[in-house]
Image (cartoon, rainbow, N blue to C red; front, top):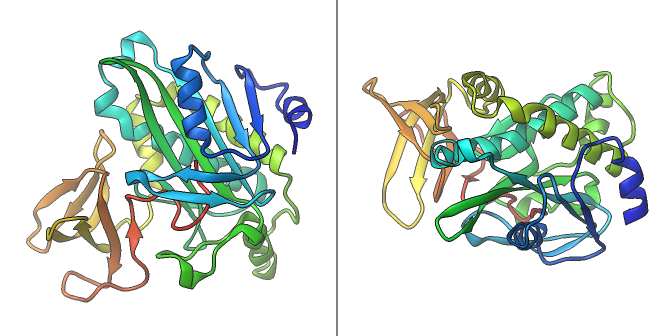
Length: 298
């Protein structure tokens, strides 16, 4: 991967300026710096490797060179939408997640789910983490930075004993799909895959604030209809509920054992599946204060 290849592959997409780094601390940090300096809408920052990729709640990770996609996109927010940003902020995260889902499903035949609020799963394993951050000038919203990290090749995926949630890659998922006799593509080109994701982001962007956006997100929501336990990190607050769907602001809607419906907003919480409202948690912890449990991110 290099800047010449990048520009050639993305030539048909209406992007702003493209910035490429062989190695960088964080693409989101660089994109935020560019946004503050006046970077145009759809300015793109791509890195082959990252040394301090940022996740939610200040988590930091490393992206190994040539194994993943790590990029950030600057979205300038229209003046008429700025007042509504706090209400719809989580939708920007979902915009990236849905774009990755679309690219994987339409071009590679892989089934996907979104682990609320910010991770993409394939075969029950994490393949991608996303992070959206607002860029402010005083109290004025300037832009939203969309950060995306995707495990493309298996060489960059940590072992299960190194993470809180099992991870996979596009490469391994394609192998698994062939072994399951599911029609799919044998190989993946990182630059072509990047083009496919960016095309989906740009295509879905006009629907971002519309009611149907939430419905589309719900269709891919992991654990829908199943029981989960949610722990607020740093506190002793633990709740259990059955996942019903999403609120219009992107909050997770649940129902407790008494039939009461409540919601949980994204933030410093840990979510994991349970068999029912009385059972102990099963499988792996899902930390929604992280973007990638030990994986690449932005």
